Length: 172
Image (cartoon, rainbow, N blue to C red; front, side, top):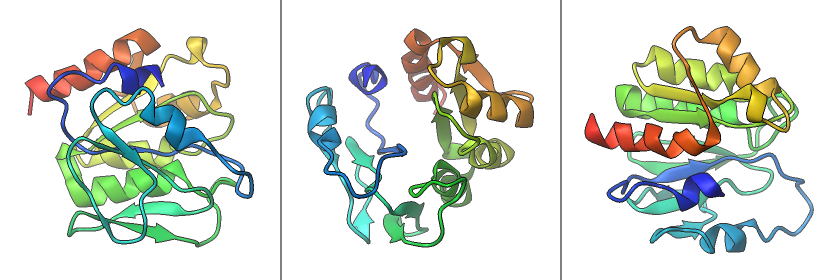
């Protein structure tokens, strides 16, 4: 939430948030994120939603989020990846494929390996990648898996993650 709250001024790109959530439990997460949106709209996308600047898209429970070449979101109900649907790997891999070196991924605290492979795909496409410093994580497995896969991944303290995004703005 603090990362969204501290998105830099001028950071107008769409943001996709993929969290592992229970699939059959009502969630108030969209409302919580909307409370810290920092001038951005927060929504759970539907299939074929057009990506728009200054929007934060929260992956719906129990659906993978894919990005299409026409800059739309596709929702997918295929098998879980790393026991997760939505899978961070699936979204990161799609971002690498569609956006190439313009893609960016940040992998935060988590208890499995989901996200490491997808983050590596963003890096291989020339995109920008960072992980939360494992020493600051409640569950360090996800950032550690990415650190083991990607030599040049940035390992950042939570307070510095917004600066990573600000740096993207300066170098676009």
